[in-house]
Each structure stands twice: as C-alpha cells, then as structure tokens.
Length: 218
Image (cartoon, rainbow, N blue to C red):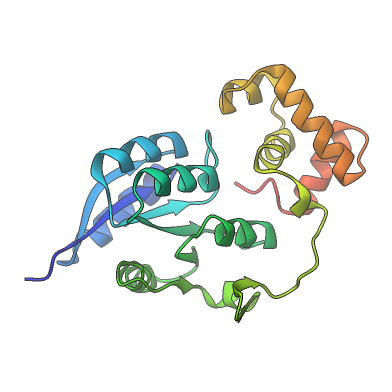
C-alpha cells in the first residue's frame, strides 16, 4: 500500500479550512495531519507533524506566510509548501518563488486541481495555476516572473510590505505592532522606509497606494 501524503492546512478562514479538510480527507492517499489559522501556528504545527506538504493561504494575520514558509523549510527541509490565494499579483508570485514554494494555486481552481497540485508536490514537481503560469518564464537560471522590471512595491522588504498592508486596512501603529510582535518605533521605521521607497509622503497616500496596487487584499 502506498504511503499517504501528510498535509498541513493553513488558512485564517475557518470555513475554508473545514471545506478543505472535508474534501481532502476523502482521498485514500492524503492524510490531514493538522490545521492552523496563521503563520505562527503553522510553524509550530509543522515542527510537530513534519508534513510532506503545507497548503498555505497567502494573506493571514501574524507572521507573513512567506516568512513562515522559510522557517518551516528550515526546521522541516523535506516539507514542500504550496501557496493558495484568491490573488496573484506580481509581488505575491515573486515572493512565492523566492521562498521556494512548490506551487501557487488560485482559489478559483476546482478541488481536483488542489488534489493534483498536492500529488505533484509530493512527487517533487510544481504546480502553478494557468493565470500564474502566464506571468512566469523558465530558462537555464530557473523560474522567474516574465517581466524582469522591478516595480516600486517589489523594493519593499517583507516587513515593510506587511506594515503597508495593515496601514491600508486602517490599523493604528499600536495595533500593527501588537499583531506583528514588534515595537511601535519599529512600525514607524518600516512605515517611513516604505514611504521613502515609494516616494509617498503621508499615511493616507500610502494606504491609497496599497489599495490601488492590490497590496491590502485580504
């Protein structure tokens, strides 16, 4: 009998988690070894269960998914990470590639595609949804975004991007600091660095920019 694929599901929406658990659990070759609702929990659960695959939503509270994925890969080198998202802007795709994600599935895909991606990842192959594939090129250097130009948003660090995202959602510096577990002063530093890089001069314009560029999508 073939060994089952151990999967950890990570999504901050309980309904999505429950639907995925229900659907994936019907497959004889897939075993759900745990669920998590944010990046911090995902790191802990992955360390405990050592899953073959982590199926992770991209936009969640707490430690950002790409940072969480890197930490998971450090403690579980054999684990592969599949990203799941309703959004597929260039920043997300670039970060998914840089964090060595094994695939990127858009949430408009049917459950059968999620199953296919999990099985491909378990066999060492990657899966990218068609709309993501359209933005990728593969050459002798590997896989990358088709457009080699760097947008202003792509110059932001992960923490700066995270801070901008929460500002766009109307959160105060104190709320952001508590959520990402840093000081208010550090949040102010990330905010100022982001504004400098984006050539934006106040928080209102920063929030507008984030919304316009799709950085605030939940």
